[in-house]
Image (cartoon, rainbow, N blue to C red; front, side, top):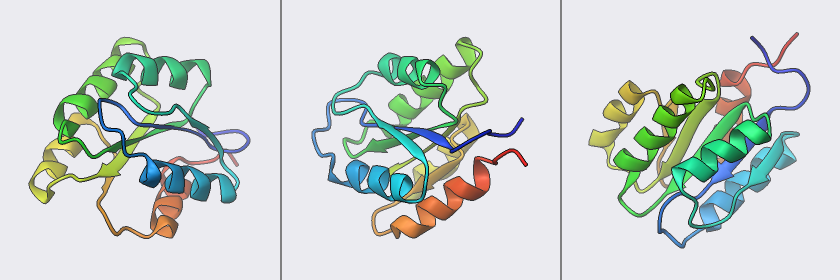
Length: 135
């Protein structure tokens, strides 16, 4: 199943982390690339993120996590998407995530992890290529 129209991405800051500059930079880069972006703001629960993604008919969720709670928060978002029959929403993210945690996150169902220093163009390119548009 492909995407019709612009790719819709929910960019979210789950958990207690209050640093959102990176999330805002990614949101703007995706928007400037022609995507529709819904930024949820700070301190979102996984339930709020998934609710927003479903309500907004999102194609993807981009999570920004700097707090160290990435294993728990990514896992909960992926689990909730499955429970709510929305596992077709692609989950990706970034933040301060140790290299050793990337493979386990991908095994949970997170499609991609972007670490500090990743050029915004790389994120845009990945979303464009991996959240396929309908022909």
